[in-house]
Length: 287
Image 1 (cartoon, helix red, strand yellow):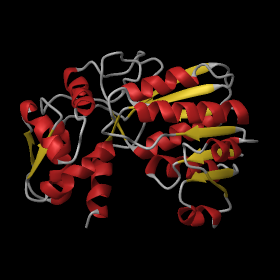
Image 2 (image 1 turned 135 degrees about the vertical axis):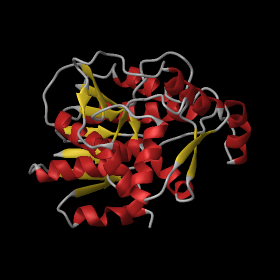
Image 3 (image 1 turned 180 degrees about the vertical axis):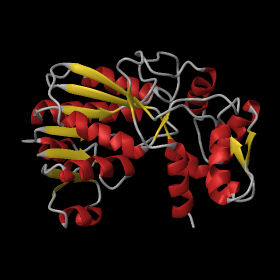
């Protein structure tokens, strides 16, 4: 039995689907009972467990061979990441009490980097989970290809603003389907202590590659327009962000190259899903 968080989202859904296809039993951990119905119909157990409800989370993780943990995204964290500290306290207490057979946490490329950025939240969680007496794996995926969903609407008019700069600078990217498959595969492996699994797609891609892929799918030229760095803070604040600096520094990290993988290519796992196939799916989904 494997407890899977985030089954109503892209990554968690892929993890649960792959485990079920491999004949494994799945306990779908959800925050909204109404969203559990599709997984119940597929034979899953379900557990209602918000990530900050220690008692319910402990129950959800109890008696399982392995657990997949992911945290709700927070793109606008307050100074000092107070929400992350609350989540760390909750999940560490639950894991120590439940003692699942192993844990896989969805971390991020760059989680090892000390430089201040939004990805410090992954670093803090890795450091806390790594002290627990349970086999622990940190899956660090690259930039999600599905982030390009934000570009589809404007690309229909021939232009999309880009925070990835320079436009021809390739960064590691990966599809959520490859992330889900990798997490499921790691859950079925055996190890002791803590380990890091770094993952990217079949090759690296730039903002220009996103534009070219969208142009192919949409059937007309698409160009990327760099958003000037000195306008980011004001722009993010108009979008409702109160603390935009962590996100801005994360973008700087990808653009300047200091957010990348910690280990060399010998241990890096490669997905098979291409950016073009993800872009085609995103466009079809938005019709």
